[in-house]
Image 1 (cartoon, helix red, strand yellow):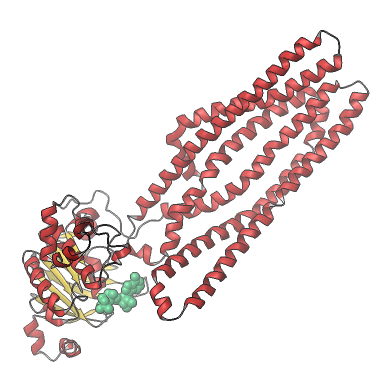
Image 2: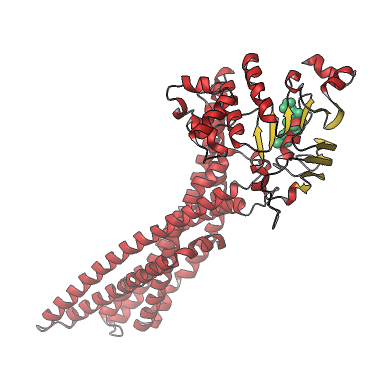
Length: 569
Ligand SMILES: Nc1ncnc2c1ncn2[C@@H]1O[C@H](COP(=O)(O)OP(=O)(O)OP(=O)(O)O)[C@@H](O)[C@H]1O
């Protein structure tokens, strides 16, 4: 709830307008039955002189309802103005927060669930802010005003009229306690369903290739059915609310008519006061009605807010150091001192790694699959923090350098290339949005990507589809190399950068990469040992430890782990 108020605060002026309008709506709501009371009084008194007064009160009554409806329109409009803006701010905040999380956060969660939190959960709060918050304020003010009037009209009848209220409130509260877990379950299942659809859409080729359509449909139907059951269960509990309120109104009105009617017959209560009393009781229970109506939104809103807060309050494993040192362009000396790391506390992926890569030097990491090569590269880019030991860049512990400065100094070409659903040009420009058209073309040429780009229907303007689906694996890899070339960072990490291209193209790209590596500190990960021949130093990793190290010539002449890998290559 605090989160909600925090995000509503900037809109206090508009909220003040809404509050003033609510006062108008409340005042006119109280005035309506009062004028009807006056009309009944006039009629009861009778006599020829009453016709003029009747006209004026009728006009007044009509005016009251016109003003009330205009006020209600104002409340509706401005409350939604606030609500949608608060939702937008929350959405922006949660999205901005996600940008600061390390890969550990994303690998532990389903992307569809994260999308649901950003897009859907934030919108679930809209009716809470627009209707519920103002609904509660209006209801409270209206109830307060009516109580004053009722006591003024007849304290005894007021007591009778209010008798069912505590019972109704207790029953509603007890029902409400069951609704919240039902809505929590519903929200979580919605997230799971989105995640499943996202997963299935991404993996549709494999689903079809392995003939898993029926099984996946069955899985979907299972979760979809569970969601429907949760939704029905929550509404089933909610359906108990209406009869409670209706029952309370009925009981209250019945008691007032019985006792108030006898009082009127005995001449102890003017008939117009009895009429007004009955009208006010219905109006008094009306707020209870809107509270009940709003309750569903509020319960759903709370469930959504909990999921939003989980993201907003999540402490990223890798964070900017407070007052971290500023690093403009690094020389590129990287040192690993007795580094150990595991993705989970009880897991060891790398242990006892000590390495030095001088500025401008190149280091190749080789080893069997799963040896920890990509993990080591990820530690240098500080996607994760080391468990023990430390990594330094130009003598600074990575944890002391501002993340944006560190990442600005690193270009990475990864095995699993990620491209955005944008034009070829924008994808190459991703790391340097201000790059000129010429710079983009020079980078594309250096990565041997220019030829295939020119053959695309719209050249550099061609949209490449989600994750670059309209390109081949080798084309994607060349675009990602062009992107790294354009970024022009002093540290280059090539993680199987040429694995997806044919041998001829690989030779061409290798030339471009050799050129690129010349002035940069480079970490190369490759299974094809031919690509690391020129590295200053090669480190052989085995089960997360350094098994051997030396130049290509050194290692080739020894009968160690490297020769086993060469044999495999
Ligand atoms: N996000 C993760 N969470 C948990 N364990 C992981 C994660 N990523 C990798 N691992 C594990 O860490 C180990 C090292 O993986 P890594 O990707 O570094 O190996 P690699 O040497 O680069 O392999 P390859 O040559 O196949 O790319 C593996 O056992 C892998 O299962």
